[in-house]
Picture 1 (cartoon, helix red, strand yellow):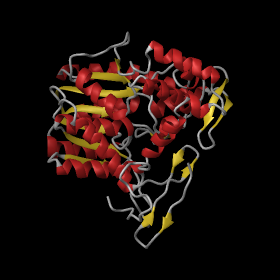
Picture 2 (cartoon, rainbow, N blue to C red):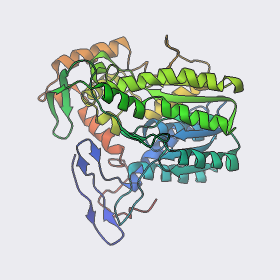
Picture 3 (cartoon, rainbow, N blue to C red):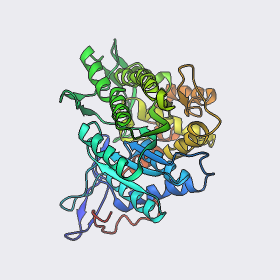
Length: 403
């Protein structure tokens, strides 16, 4: 899964994937555009979203579930969308970040379809970007009908205090040892993670918990840009027991649990204007964030095999379209005992989880490719950065600033 970027001319280069750990530091503009087009075409082939939101703000709109939310709203419901992200443009002949290319492709496709689209690049945790966004809403849209909160960041600068918070991926209470997957070398090995401290927990909650979502909704409400009946949704994950020590019951789980606290406060905030706040529990997908979590890439490789065997494997766009069409704006919401929306029903099916649990006992380096979808995992990872898309000549030089 490694490669390099070679220069063809002063303005064009042959862009290849270059992997460092769990991050690809290059991205292909035409591949990212093709990836966005595929998601757009999927949504266009589905029935229109019933009673869709007309004006949508997506906070964290450049990749994964956030990008899928923007695509679903725009091309499944003709919504006017504002997307926020913090991405790197092309400079000095170097590729931009994948999220930059994704967002440029979305804006291009939205314009071609005659849809309003406005993208704002900056730190969405900051009051500056909040105020800039509010100004755009007032000028262009008046108010917002749906706010999607889909930020994924390892660090956050608190706009109130100026303090920098850094999240960690650690268990709580005791060390944790289990299988994990070295995705670079295709090796299954044991990993031991020491427990997080009280400070680690607090830091992670400060970055990935509900406070940033609350701040956004309070600012939008105070500015009068939330429409009557507005909805807001934040995305979360629970997953199976094998991942719980480093996810649900770990530091990141504490942060995700804080969303359950925040959603109640936001619900109260929105009640005077007939609004509603939701947390949606989504299914496991390959993302830059999930690739960094020990245990999870191996679990996803096994999970994908079982979902694909049953023809029920969904990516971000399939899940989010289904969330919008059947739950947020449809008549088939699936709530759990805590009032959260659930679109992880396919992943958490008893037969799927039983099969994955059995494979987990068996999997090792020697049988990894035969009993898991590790090859699919790798291809999905590369697709995040625009590589491996059909119809793209990856040997042809391309201008990194072409989008």
